[in-house]
Image (cartoon, rainbow over all chains, first blue to last red; front, side, top):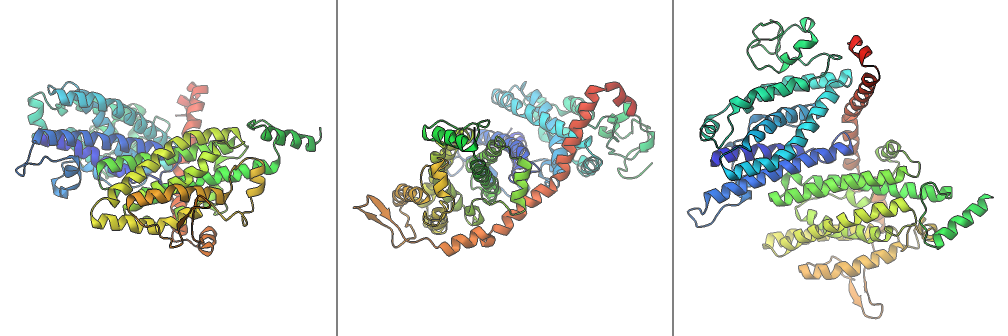
Length: 253
Length: 320
């Protein structure tokens, strides 16, 4: 249980930390406010989770209990359990938005499923956080479309960001031992069940037909039609546009 | 009616404490003074995010980190209200921002000082926000309606900032000897620049007389500075910290603190761009603006495309 909560908490803490780095440097004042809002929500979620872990751990051998800051500040780098995606540097705004969108779409469906947890505390935590995450996903989805379908320049930057970050998306929806264990007890979320929902969200936020679809795996852009737009999010080994193998992300096949 | 009559009516409104509203006639100089003052204030909020933002990733606890994030976010919000207030006078936010980025417009010099240790975040809340509040409480009664109303909201948030800053100072000053030393170091560095925030002394201030007559300001720079010293010195005493001014003492006859002479050479030097961080602050703003240009362009292009699709959905599909 503790390891499961740590994974959730560390994801929120680290992404919130990254977003906090934008504060004062965003492309527009309104975006400063929006990114800070998300950072505040995520850091707040991390606090709740760390506090819960401390409560579950109870008193240590020294007779004292830990507090939230012990987890956030007094662990070494290798003890963090966050996914690799959230610790990726901010990069340009396109990288920040793509990272956010990939995380939010996982976070939203994960949290929605977590409201059904048999653990009362977790279910309550999820219900509360889901309201915040719903806003995060709306924000990042809107910016995916705006930048993906804005100008040639913004489209190219989004394309580059997707190519850089996509590789980290699989980790979020692939259960590890801790997640499998928690899911089997009905406490945690069965990620295999929510994976289709997450992936269904992705093409909705790819740029519409007027611009080139982002390409994640190698396939011939010229062969693509608007209806196969969702191939860019497919993490399967086959390209749904041409059914070719797609292991090579950059090259043609 | 001649413009002289307009001016008489305008001044009599001000004398009667009637707020001037955006559509009312006002002298050009009144409008210009307000645009300059409100936009400088807005720029100060935005530049002011930088020295504090510097500590968001290094805040010593999650609670402090959340408070600091929220505070810096409030400052962005204040910047936005103030640019909006300036826009009611016919100014354009983009033009005002350009004036900041090209160095044509000023912002509060206090933000050209660096934040070197965590106690600086406390000192900024306590002293810098404390000094700003002296000015801003006065401005809630300023003669221009939109500015006065923006100030009411800003003051509420600022007084929260001031309290959280003082709370950090209490924690540091009552903490370990190292923490107390940091708090003292911070007070040493921020005290004089905070007194400078009220601007030149009344005998030197070029804008003061007219601003008082128009009730843009209601107190002179020196009056506000005195008020700040009188309020703040007992707070420093409570913390057990020493105000770095050997001339500071209570003057029974005046019922005020006497304090030493401000280093006006330093004041003018920082105003002219030679403070410790003037270059870094402006560079950071210019970088954010330039790096963000493609994002703003894309947002505009997207909004236009969306509008076109709404107007002619079939044509948009065909074009695709």
